[in-house]
Length: 395
Ligand SMILES: *Cc1c(COP(=O)(O)O)cnc(C)c1O
Image: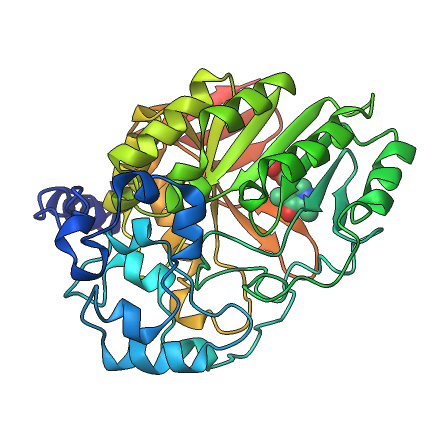
């Protein structure tokens, strides 16, 4: 083992014994003055949660002690991608600590308004690869359908901030919005997989979501339907019996859920994930690598372990896309590779996601990770394992 690796391993050992910063018990909303009279049935009603989202400095400062950077950020973040936080998420915020990983994901700060070199409006060139409104077709056999511009909460690291936010959606005939996209999928028999994302598709009303799912499902060559969502994490109340029963009718549906930090895995979130699993929807996670939030191997390890416990299979870790105003979230690529090094072999294979960089300019997801092939000659591979021991494989 090299000195560097020994030093890294020692650091990892130390990190494991660090005191736990996360307290998993959310604050009791009835102890917070602005919510003390809220009826528990209202709190559990996802429409109530949406209607009562925290969108102003005034309301937020009654829940947590705002830092000057946050105050400046909230003032500046007017219009597109302005702040919107569900009261549920509000109760997960550390009231004192502005470095709280859930605060940083939800509350704008002044740094968001700095545009750094290499940053782009549409880093993955999705608009260029769009053959019909709301549709992105990049890979041969699958498409991405952007179902809405809205989310339960607006993440400050959003890669689609050019589209997403709490503005009025363009006046479009709701009935015909997706006609061209559906026609395109129908006429392209190579498309066997449709990923419905957004925005967050689970923010649509049951009828509108079912209508869209039904239209996609009725195309005979579409084998696989997937949903990309963060609602089980930001608004678990949205996952109702009625919703999961609707999903059952269109099985198989796979779901990718955006999880970034172990603190997001609450009892309430587990209930939502259990309902989806028990309705037969396989769950995967998507995680964005974020500086100061989940860029330490021990945090990521804790996250993937806890995901398996709620039956969510870690799927992807994304390098934070070079989207405008996200410099303060971006880590070096080496941080991601180091995390993969500390996972593979050291823990269950099911706990190990794939770390990808979405090739800027439309390259699609490119896997990156530690190198395990040391050399390769005719009929011979020299490999190393997770401990750094060397093995030769003869073909
Ligand atoms: C991520 C993505 C997909 C799905 O990719 P998988 O690797 O199959 O999960 C499809 N289309 C676009 C444009 C994407 O960005």
